[in-house]
Length: 228
Image (cartoon, rainbow, N blue to C red; front, side, top):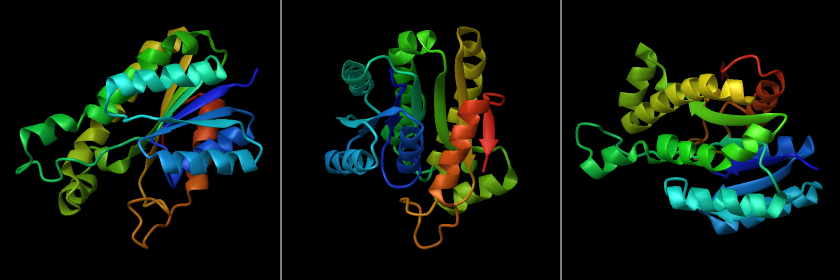
């Protein structure tokens, strides 16, 4: 049977490249996002490359929707081997003026959504010979003066906090799930990726390089975090 990867937060850039790379390595690919049209286009593009793929519409901030997407992917392809989490949300840009609702929402996608996806897929992951949770993260979450300055200057304070929380979550889950045979790791992106929402013509990093970093991380399983 083919191994199965579920890509949350599917869109242009990293998630497209990851889906293409893992599909080329023989995985069946489940694409998950809120944008139905984008999902269908992604499935068609993968099918044209000979990759078995299907689309599932869900909001990564909604636990019920995340659980439903995992269940639908399992029903379509069988047991899940890999979760790849590229989903993010940029809320509470200025922590000094953000509403209570925005502040609470900082953690909806990177903590609540991601953890819910892992819990929903965990029975499958524990039975897989090469189970993994792979997380896209950003350098704004680093405890570093330059990263802090960028978070303030770029009006991305909420995203900075979210990335820091996600970094800690990855490290904790890597330790917790290693005895169960489930690898957890992240690729931390510190440059603007070409073709993404952050690219206003200043993108310098090719998404395929990020996808290659994920494949190496998945294959080697020898570190929790890689910075690119």
